[in-house]
Image 1 (cartoon, rainbow, N blue to C red):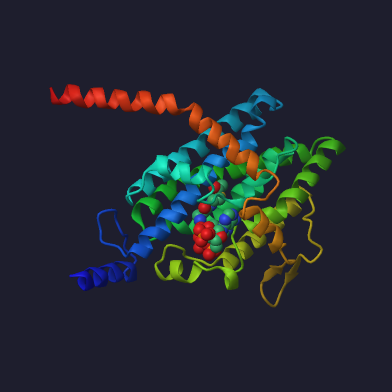
Image 2 (cartoon, rainbow, N blue to C red):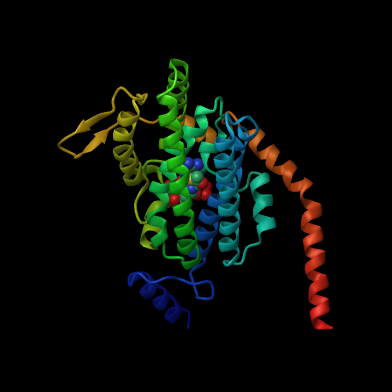
Length: 311
Ligand code: ACO
């Protein structure tokens, strides 16, 4: 009966085991997983744009090879995650259509422009650093296909973070102008990176439910604090300042205190009115329609193979 199924589901969660695609799950759980995985997949795919912008202008063959590999990894993460979403009964074409018609979200962070090559380093260091902070606990998320996808994704994100930090170390050892470019990029990306973790816990409609279902393992504010604590010493080692006069070690709390995030800006960017939202979605819509012939050819080929197998 429905009650037995529900009891079994609750037991699997309580024992820290995984929910798998064919298992019974409450509709709310299914819809939350679809929402989070789709948003995550869209973020990876849209996230290719700000950095892809610099592939043709990378300053050396080595930097170009690294950047190409990284952007390709992001495509891979997106495809992985769309596959995980499909195990819940969705279809990736439908998800893409929801993205380009604004019915599904992607991370606010990718709506900011990349103005210099230092931005590539800062995205690796701060944006991928924040992504790791957020995603390592998701390797223990209760939905099996999502948790397993996250293991490989986190390994690749670590490489992305390291390449960013190494790029910045190189620039910081360079000319005064290079150091200025790094500082300017840090000033522009610091606050948006903190916004990646989502609204404060008190204003997060989904956290309590997702924690109870063990989809999320920590709250938005916990992960944001963890990121700040881990990043401040890295900034010191690099020799860059973080643009927050209130940032200060608090020995009583054992954490860094930091200033108030501009939540009005966060809401604006999430609701579609950030610096690059229109451009990002228009680009995605264009490449989706330009790729239609590839999807059609792949489907025709698959149909032909099926027919041959049946004959
Ligand atoms: N950008 C855009 N939307 C956001 C952001 C953000 N930075 N943070 C929260 N939101 C959205 C949520 O998706 C939710 O939207 P919805 O309910 O209308 O669908 C709403 O704001 C309220 O937020 P929460 O209640 O806190 O939502 P949730 O519990 O889903 O937590 C979080 C948000 C932390 C982003 C979570 O979904 C998550 O951990 N996702 C997986 C990681 C991810 O998607 N990363 C993408 C960027 S990292 C990268 O790809 C490099």
